[in-house]
Length: 123
Image (cartoon, rainbow, N blue to C red; front, side):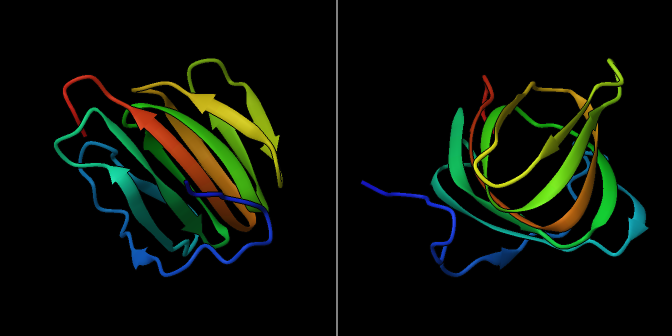
């Protein structure tokens, strides 16, 4: 078993540059840097579980897979382009995003999240 809790050290993370063509990342403000780790699943699998961290800044992207996430540290705003809906997220908040959603992430305080994703056909 693995426990992900706010305040716990999540361990080592690797740089995850904003360069996935399928996600079509666009930096809108600042110089956000992402890092993460896949703990289960990932490339070639329909599911993936891991940790993602991002520094302060704003970017937009297209989500890859349905994803359930819980914020472990920090704060952000996520805006769905299709609906215009904005969600403000902080520690212990959980949200679901859908495959293909175009969203803007405004990271207002360095964010760490645990995520579980599902994408038929694999990531």
